[in-house]
Image (cartoon, rainbow, N blue to C red; front, top):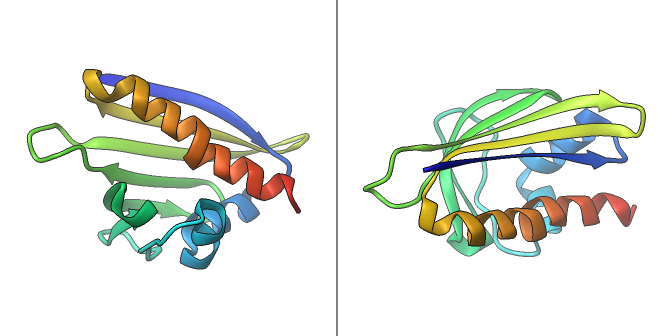
Length: 127
């Protein structure tokens, strides 16, 4: 099992990033796919028509989102922690995911960079 950690810079406030990541309509805009999401701890979610599924664990408005992403029943929980820090250019987004199965790591992290957080970067660049 591996951990993935990366920082992304976004040209908007942490509050704007938070709203884009926690409102179903906004998520659908930057992913371009069907989304099931409720900003409430304990609720399950689905992005990209079920390509990413999990459970929301914690929300701290404008600062932090913690989720459990599922990799099948046999694996330990994979915890995603997204922290939003204000910086000179807008927001520094810290993405950390634990317990990614070794055999999925390369494909999965490429997808995170290109589609999940890459889509979020593209969403804010177009404004």
